Length: 489
Image (cartoon, rainbow, N blue to C red):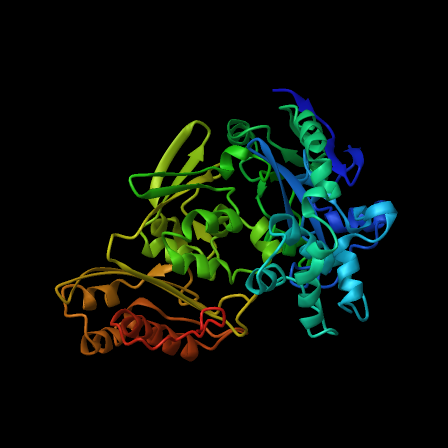
């Protein structure tokens, strides 16, 4: 295996090679401290406010995809073979303002200006993929950008008018795309990257097979995928993450396929890409993913990472458990497949041996005629951490519950099935009397705790009521529980 001792990437128009990179060095610090590119701001240092938004271009198949990311929690080790674009790279004709910038000026989309570069970069990413976006697309693209001054309507107006200034197909990133693709292919030379020693060591495997070999040699290394969780370990808790193994560039872990109504998702698939693959067949899962962080977090965070970190409030495990998902775990050349629900053993403990990693998750699509729902309880609707999350997968035949799988997050030390509640429902008429009788069984399955997000009593009451909500929504009352502003006639 060839080993290279430097990271290689493009920064705006410059080819960069770095041999002195710490595993915990963020892209934000590199830009501001090493390159004096201070248009990228530090606001929250946890991926919430969007002031640090930059674009990262990565090879995807034969093409190049640019996505907005949070530089404050994006580690340098994840950038090998990528193109980083900051607000300083934007320009219009004859060196003037870029169309996104000009639209913000003309529509008065900036007041104090601190957050403005982040908004510009998020709108830039949106403009490239959707030159004439709907209001819904604009709001979704800006979920991860916070502004205390403008009230957002001026920014919305700017977003609607960008294409009146120029054609996105003639933008600098479009014009140079072929050259950038060629350069990035050259940078990715098939080598493993190893930099540093002792507490300052990072590794970028060359392939999934190489990842398996690295973890066999370094079984206690820290795997870093999207860093939406690990990033906060560094910026908020000052934890060491060495040796860090960065897997975001492994294209084989970003694969998605379907066979016999089972969708196989590589562990490195982002929330954004998973949504594209699953939302048409499982609309409730698409709606749930829309509430995970902002666009930047969804572009970085991965399904495999959300599972592997074992958090009891991870958003994807409960719905995936309710769907009957399984995991493929790999250690060296050996693989094993287990039910996702069996992966979570106890708080902070998973059924994963040292050196073993999550390679893929296999998601069965709901049966024809099945009812599936996932409900997330938070203090604010968007970009907030879950207090409790319930997922339901129901098949009713002739008015009787033929099968039901229920899973909750935030109600126990792990994401967990509601087996006592399921038993109380299975084989019974799907009626309110049956549901209310089953609600009394929640105490056999769950013993939630109180914390800053919700009290134990609130979680238990909400958990029971989510089952009642699911019943009402599946029995055709026609009374929506969530008013969706873009779907109201």
